[in-house]
Image 1 (cartoon, rainbow, N blue to C red):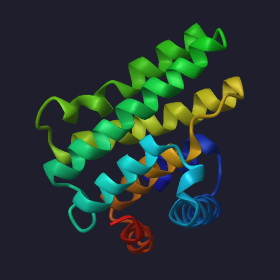
Image 2: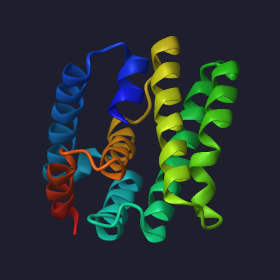
Image 3: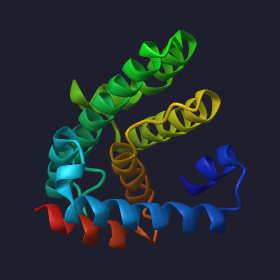
Image 4: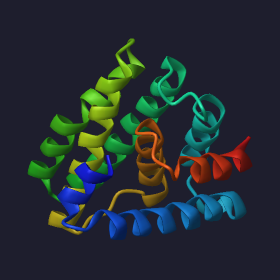
Length: 167
């Protein structure tokens, strides 16, 4: 996952990892400390993911929760893009995030969902760079954290520890 997203970002893997880790630490910590500043919808997804996913990132319950979160993330982001007249960007989000929402409707292999989540995250990043319209960063962090853990990244333990504050 790091390699895929880092390649898209054009950053060395170690620098990319540091940036994302700092973002996740500050983001999850911020979410835990100041829940009233994070959209209630995002907090609800954070709670669900923190219940179903730690140590079980490839199980169907987790995949379904991450998929449901990604569906709302992508839909909200597409809505923001559309309200700013970025119709082409909306289509890119629809095309590249559709597969990431599939686990809301059925059972799919973890490797396929992991790939779909990564593609969606990469496209959201690309579109945000092209348009300067950013997604809800707390919500986006949930997706990135899930991808890291599905890829068994060494930072997953830290992510799971932070998620423990939502239970």
